[in-house]
Image (cartoon, rainbow, N blue to C red; front, side, top):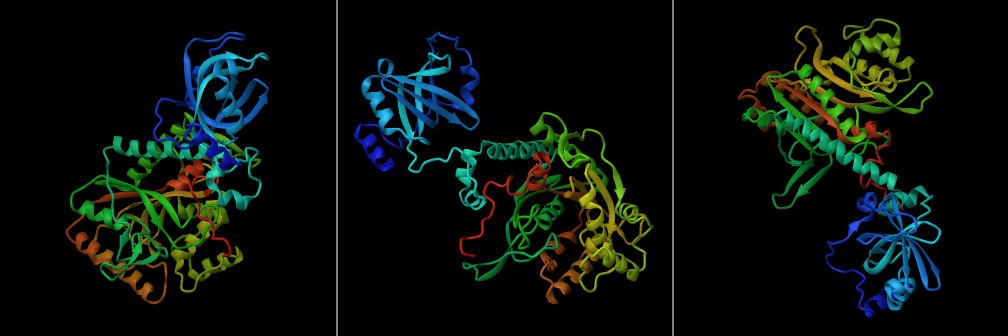
Length: 486
């Protein structure tokens, strides 16, 4: 029937999909100016509104229609006296719910006092071939496979994507205001480096060469630092061929920033400013929706300085006993087993400590907190701590039970860096899919000398989750959906 209506519109000289139409204003943008009509009066100024038709009600010589655009709604009143019998007849017979139209007219009110646009002309902007389920979509699988439709009928979900845009813009502006330069580095490369994760692999036919999609831009950004470019940052896509859950997606957006002549303390202060500004861009003030004692989300002030706690102190507090990087490995393994942590074979004390941290500390941290000074064993790109043997100058930022970012005093010693990457390369050769590979281009650059540098990484998806109190699938435009039948 809708295709029949489309053909009839075309025959009547009303194209179903006209090209170019810049005079109308979307209803959501125009609505603040529409609250001026007095009951029983008719304004003289004309308005040209664009939106979707939600509902049509025919009453003989008068037709009422509800125009909608995201959260905005407004009644259209069409009658033969104002519109002409031909225009009214075509509207009532050929316009369907879901169609995008432009309506031109003056503001007034209906007999029952409802504010309305008294339509003198209308234009079809896009004919909807399928009906729009304005009542919502109940089936989660249907919602996932029809993301555009889900966003259309759930403007609250669309608001999350708009909030994401404001948050990312605030992050970018903060870094620009701090004197950072935005750069872009390759997504395709020949080696897997910058983080420990399983990469996606592909092949470039032009060079008959196997490639990987980057898991992090870190090594390329450091090569720019060696060249004298800095401070710098990149907001871009990374890819990790790993699990999918409430906080992980194989394709994700991250911010990495590097500042010469700085360390992890400088990056901690910068990160606090970045996130406070992003939260303010969304909520109007520096707050995050964090769980209260009952588990309900409550907007919580984060404008004060955030706690800074060493990782080993945090784990020791949770255990009720003192442990450190120097604690006997067997003792750490026994503690992990008592907590039912599944450990890989061959882990050293530092890696077991990190497992304890992940189990005991991350999930129970509500307020934004910096956990500092991690084991050297699990941080191959990080500088050794200046006063604590066996540890590195690294922090993780945790809020709402999840990690939001991490930062290092970057390792600049090319000899130590080569040794650590050689160890990673050996693990890769032994079949560890997450180990880094030896990147000679990066090492040769580092051998030219890189100034002392602070570096940070923040997951954009998780940051927006924390700011909006939602899940990762809600803050992605099109989260991955398993193909039907898989």
